[in-house]
Image (cartoon, rainbow, N blue to C red; front, side, top):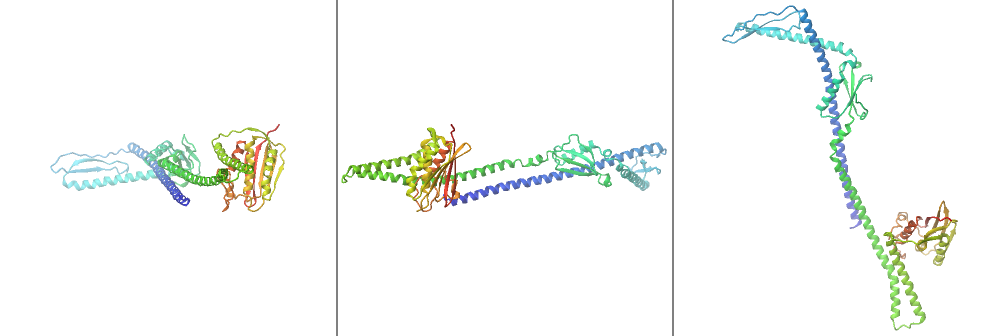
Length: 507
């Protein structure tokens, strides 16, 4: 599959997952908002009803008090009794008449009536008497209500709020009304005056959830300075609201898991594609690298088998040397691959001993002198480390320096000499060494990849740089297995500098 196709499919799938996750979160937000609005409306409706019930209860108390007082006054002062004589006589027409006498002195007198037998001529008179009874009852009830209203206006509103409100009854009213509106969670409330003075606080009051407080005015038809305020809040309000969206949590979790899995899959796909490309490059490079020594050995073998050629001692020596050198080269290439495989399996075994790094670096530099001078350049060593003893595997660490110098020569500027500088110095309890060149350098985007196995920096259309892309990966492994660090500084077109730090061995 082409890279563009993978990117297109990945983008579409990724956007689809993100859109699905966004819609789920949006739906949850809408549900929470709707549940919050319903909760607010229910609490407001409950508080309004509690306020009305409080005023109604107060009105009923005053009404009962006034009725009782009126009855006691009437029974003690009223000596006039309504008398009526009635006979109940059963007739053929079954008509009844009502005759009442109302006490005119007190509107509180409850009219008494006696059913008497009458004929059709007295029906009209009875109807008029009933109308009079109803009218007198209305006058009484209106006068009583007017008296209660005046008592509430001029008596009840003058009482302090703490005497006027039955807090135990208020608590019960709140519980009942909230349950009637579908809210059955713990709540805490306080009662305050309009000036903010707290006159009551429920016994189990705490401040949790106080940021969402609902308030309602008590006795709202009274003068402003005589009204009160009940404030209520719910410690478990958030849990109550979010309980309605619990079923969405698994859905979001599964969506996130799918999204993460998808991203991981795409990363693996791209990584495998990258490894596939690197593997192909490695196979091509390995084929090219192995082909040269094999061809040389094959050619030497043919020369030995060619009977037409005169085989002088000098020619035989030349052919033998060529076979030996190409065999060593072939062995070196195969060993490079086997070494990386060994490091991957953590089977590397080092024969460590104390080595003078200054001396090792000078020896390797001397070996490379001819190759550097062949390009027209020169190699310089600046040995500045005083404590230069390190404990390393001599063979492997010599190969580290060898690889760094070999890379510097491979990636020199075309048709220009290469100049190398090797330095050592001490800092704290570590020894540092650097290999610096003035070659083509490395682009910034490639610097972090040069230590990856099989990775080779592209050199455009030039194919004169040989290798498997294992050299720097080998260097990094060896340095880290010796408890060291390696870092690279490079500027494209100006050169590269590798710096290695190692712990020193003090006498």
